Length: 126
Image 1 (cartoon, one colour):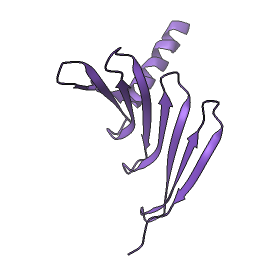
Image 2 (tube, rainbow, N blue to C red; image 1 turned 90 degrees about the vertical axis):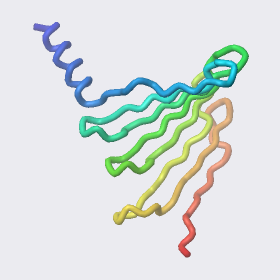
Image 3 (cartoon, rainbow, N blue to C red; image 1 turned 45 degrees about the vertical axis):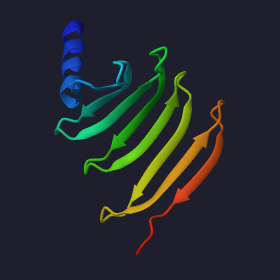
């Protein structure tokens, strides 16, 4: 019975979110530069995009960025992490009820995870 519940939970998770094959970018000499992994919700909407960048000489991960999207396909939040998984930067988007961008809040962090800079950007209204 327990195995059946675990299988059911696994299937439910697989149905709720799914990912496609990653999009790979290579340099002219064939080295992997970047991989993009898109994760979709149960309504086939992009939910999260994960992008890894790789060091040309070693092939190791240099950084990882996560971009989260809302149901309307708008960016909600971007997070950038270092190779050792330290949060370096966030960019959070805030929208009005009509869907237009109200403001963005960008934050930078030091190697200890402490906030070092915070900027609020409001779009110009021409």
